[in-house]
Image 1 (cartoon, helix red, strand yellow):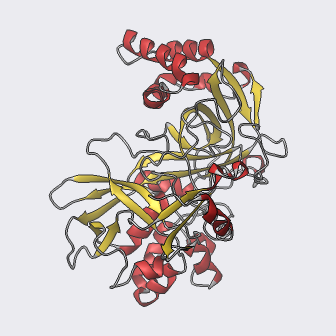
Image 2 (cartoon, rainbow, N blue to C red; image 1 turned 90 degrees about the horizontal axis):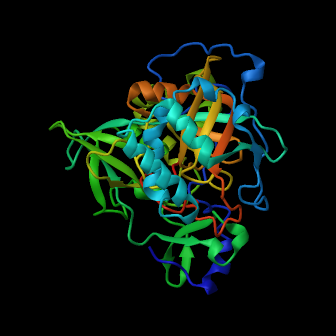
Image 3 (cartoon, rainbow, N blue to C red; image 1 turned 180 degrees about the vertical axis):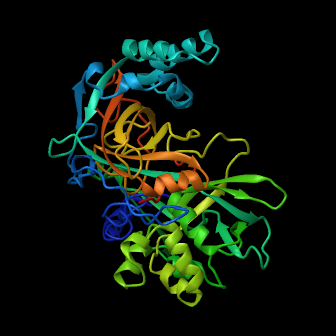
Length: 443
């Protein structure tokens, strides 16, 4: 990708309102689940959750809030439920984090110690051994919101499985596009530090940067992206939801499963088609699940294209190596089902172990678990905010779509961690691993 010179940056600021941070995504419909982006196999009335366990929409931090400043010192004994979790089950995800964090000075010692424990325990340390390791090498911090509160919203996401082919046919007409060569990304913080995590995307027309093609312009017979197709999918609505999740598995007719992940995005704002259908009176809020939207689409084929074009955001993909244990997250490592989360990298360092105290999807049943902060998402903003990765397939999709819970988060950082943004050695989400990657367009 090309980077625009300093002289052009002044022009870019005028585009920031419509082409800003990676995955400028609006949250899906605010009320309680089921949510727009789920894969619920059947409609059912929501479980009545006690008022104290419902998520609270907190004020989002502004650009002036210092990096990691919402982390407050805490103690191991204050982490709600950590004694209830089998920490050995989180160990493989932590080793995935260490595979890249060990190259960062502030993480080198803790990851070296982790590798030593891993070798001594034949890659299967006990929960007690993992607990001793974390207590010895890490300090505990509690995440907070800008208003000082410590409860926030925990949502879920998953990896869908699609049917596809490497060649176009009547059965598989809908392309997945690789990132285009003329898409230009400008990282604004290189010249304006206060705009860290902000970027604009566009294409050059003469000597001007203009917004990149939107969904309606891309999905035409004369698409400007012709030649960038690398996979074809049977269902256009599945392609749409793949773009929301950011990564997926494509099942080919020969039995092969191909990992596809996020490569880039066109810079346009994400608009929820579920919210639009509710506003138009096409369905009720309770019907606006992924399955509900798919059912509407199949019964309203003549209206589908116009509906999808109301979301101008478009995601480009790439084929990932075979045999990955999970999709690649923003940290650049495979993320593992039920042990990886997406966070806001401005307030939680990518790769860090985190502990979630929340509840099961659409339930009051406790869910207290050690996770790894290995991913990011366009709507995952704030100090107490996480997106729980449930894994791949319909069952994971049903859980992900139903999850919108209140929760608290603790972060574990090396005892010599330096809170100064530029010298702490943290990858702050600029590494596009898969679908993100990944900085995914979700929620």
